[in-house]
Length: 153
Image (cartoon, rainbow, N blue to C red; front, side):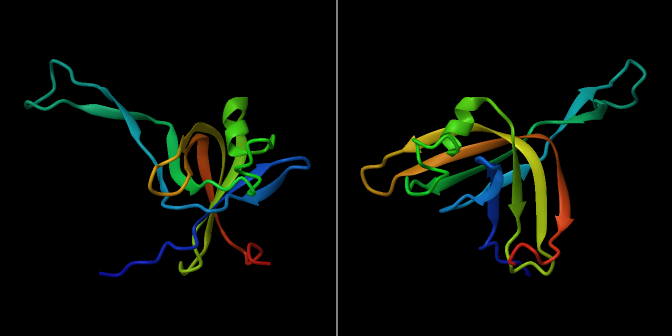
């Protein structure tokens, strides 16, 4: 079975003043983006057989979730910073984000989207390290492009 290592996957947020894309550091396992169709029942009395019929009508909200090691020396985690992921969550404002596939992919892809930090949960385990569970709800779709080599420039 063939596969591609995902190490090197990155999430970038365009925050701050002046606005500039900043890499979210200490990123761990990422789940998503997930895409779900919403279906409506179109079954009628004339539907043949004993099965329902449906039609896909819209894409549900797309989410991206991940834990990050909590390090307040990172501007994205510093709770005193207006540009932290926590403050973005409390602002109820959508921001530009990018997801970038790792360097192990034959073609490195960049997914650009607008999104809300819709959940930010701290964890302070007795045994373990401080982290934050973060969820981004994507507002609209994701525009995928191939990296032109400028990401590593």
